[in-house]
Image (cartoon, rainbow, N blue to C red):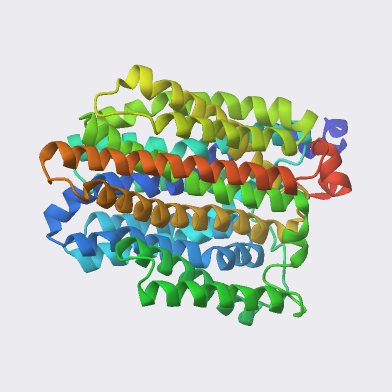
Length: 500
């Protein structure tokens, strides 16, 4: 008995292997809650608008309020996680996100709903980087890292489609308010798991906060996201659109210069100078631009042209989710460790480009089985080859004190890409519909054709964005397998963030 008590404790890998996978489940639930919130509320917006009585112009602010807070505060959220500890940041983010969701679900008017969505975005900016940073520091073994990031990448890629399905079911059979209330269940499960299994990790970085950097990057990202949202509701030629976009570019440029000169930068240049992480950021940016052509305009096409119900539309995306989940496992666990991202990520983006190009040929009476389903499966294969590895390589080799801000940078790339995609593709689609109707009578048939032309134009441009992302990723990524790219830092990534 004494001998058993005095034996060396089992290694972290031996003692906590099972617990690490429970931690992955917690992080996956938290990530799913944040990701599906981008689409689940969109499905409910028309019903919420009718219930609360706000205008079409106001409706956009339900989405924009969330995007502005989330996108502009991500880097600060990642840095806060480094300062206070990522378990604390995760718990605060989960509780705050749940409280804001409850407030939004109980909204009695438009101002209350927008305020709740903005608060959601702020807590989401604290939550999302903590999830990815915890994943990167918990799974340090190359084999386990591949499995974990394959699962995480599958959740991140499929979250939008799951949001469409869940939003359709809740809106159709319960109430639009449940698209917000459902977050309380996700947050409760994730918070309980985090409380039980995550240790109270020490702060990874006690350096003073880079206040000028925070002010510059927050205001710069706010200006970019606001400018893109304003372009979506007005035009690219609007003075406010141009002014905010230019201001955002200038502020982010100044931020880049400042970060090379201050002693304790918010975003250390070493985080983004690495070509592997740089390639991941570019792949994530362009994939996020193009993916909105899938979720937004394919939803419009299925419901508006083929007459699918919201629930049926959600189920229509499930084959893509299945293909993505399977391919994410193969890419992260088999292909990425052997051949690295330089080959598989561009191939994945090109698969998405081909799928979107083929989708742009759909017509008013096309069959889902023959003209949509095969291309959705191809999209799932492409996302599994590109998005899932990008999450893994985007955090590869980060030291613990850089994990939070490095994860936030990847999240920021994804969020800004989504904002660009939403604004740009909506503008291009609207312009295509207007151009189609020039010289034609606004009959019901012509209006249907104009709407179809707007969707297929968005699909074609999405294909072009995927091609651009594939080319840039192929140029930026370095050759080599995962072990060669990680170098000696992989072994020094830090202990698993679990109880001893």
